[in-house]
Image (tube, rainbow, N blue to C red; front, side, top):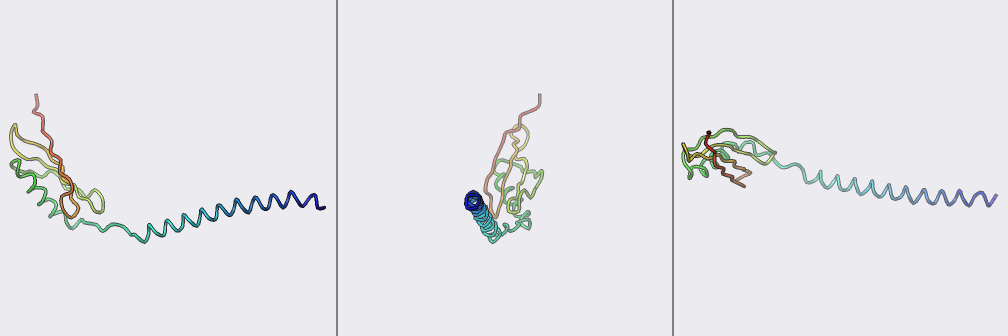
Amino acid sequence: MTSNRLPALCLLAASALALGGCVAGMAASAISMAARSAQGRPASNEHLKPDAEKACSAQAAQYGVVRIIDVEQRTASKIIVWGTAGEGQNRRSFECAFGTKITSFKLRAIKPLG
């Protein structure tokens, strides 16, 4: 009977090691999820859309007359303002990212038709 117990004990020991690794992995995953949850979600800045439009318009105004095309809440903490600045051959498009202030401003030439 002793010879039959040895393979069973080896199998049981190997299973315990494998399961122990799974349990440790599950515990680490749970701790990581709890830490991310404790950080919370970033607060929405949607109430700042008028401020974003005003700040981005002021930035674009140095290139001429400003026309806002769209203001979009891209993420909870990022507002994007699109528009044009200038007139005629000097008109350019812009994309302005805003959090609590302008975080990026991209200006592009508008190619004339024809």
